[in-house]
Length: 84
Image (cartoon, rainbow, N blue to C red; front, side, top):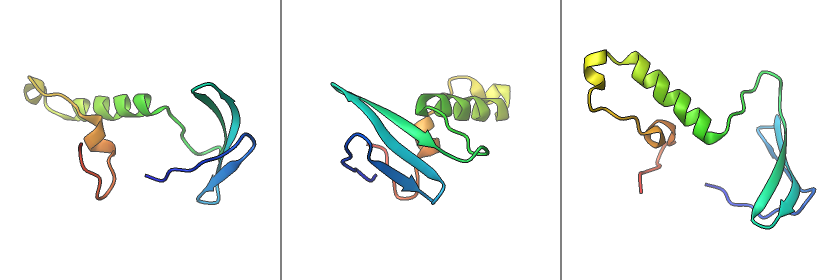
C-alpha cells in the first residue's frame, strides 16, 4: 500500500486517467474529490466487497452455501498480499 501526505488542494493522478484531490480536512475526516472517465466504476470498498460476495454466493450451488461465508478480503487482495 502506498501512503502519501497531501494538503488541501493537492492531488494525485492514477494511470493518467484518475485524479484524486484533497478538498477538505475536518478533524479526523478527509473529503476527497475524484475526476475519472465516464466508463470507470467507483464504489465504496464495503459496497464493492458486498457485490463480490453476492456474486460468489450466487455462483455456488445451494448445497455448498450451508455453513459457507464469504471473506471479501480474500477476493480483493492483490498479488503478494496476505491476511493479517
